[in-house]
Image (tube, rainbow, N blue to C red; front, side):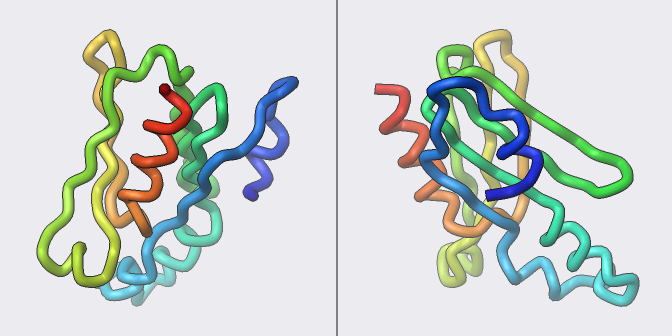
Length: 120
């Protein structure tokens, strides 16, 4: 589990599912600058029994945390290549209509299933 999520767990909160960026992120023009390596090593995508936490970035961080009760749905978008290599976009829609999208997440359907198990 990542350092950020580990340091912010609240009492009686347990990690249900963890995800990382898919290795497919290494096949991009950004690879010349080694940015995908930094993205891969510093990202955390976690479902706990109380909330969903998504953290990306090293110097410029983007942190999204939402209680399970405040999430309307978790959707997965996958292209044909995404289905073949098991990666996709995870879209989280909150009760206020907020929408967060995270691209090239490894095993996105497992992430969605973990959320659905906790929600019920």
